[in-house]
Image 1 (cartoon, rainbow, N blue to C red):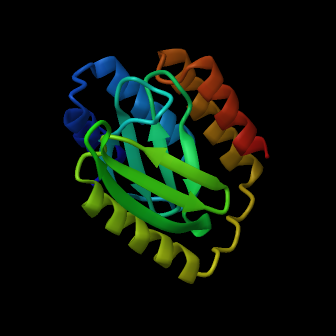
Image 2 (cartoon, rainbow, N blue to C red):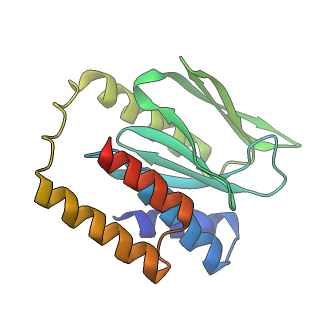
Length: 173
């Protein structure tokens, strides 16, 4: 499963068929991917501050909440201490994620029990896996090639100005 499949599935569950929103969500996630991070699962849910549903994306490193045109809200899995599901008449299945970074509540979550179990398992794995050594610093030629690739993506319109700037800063460190 790749990032596009994961996000497309969640958008379908959310009932959002807007291709531009899907593409924006994929670009936002891909621009913020940590080295070695892989997609695990996704579902749809609503943050209490939002009216429409967004997408909850579970990766090997983080839980991300994506909402149309907003930057992803990340929760590191190593900080997650608990994930519970409650059912209410008004808000449907409510997923509460307790983490060292704070408590996060998502309402009307599709298949919340399954997603909560996936979240608990992924957070156990993240805490038990030793941190990876930092990637070696790229050589000057590799860095130049990566910058040229970013510039080409930006010129073609695949990256917005903000995404291009963030990616460039990540490369240059």
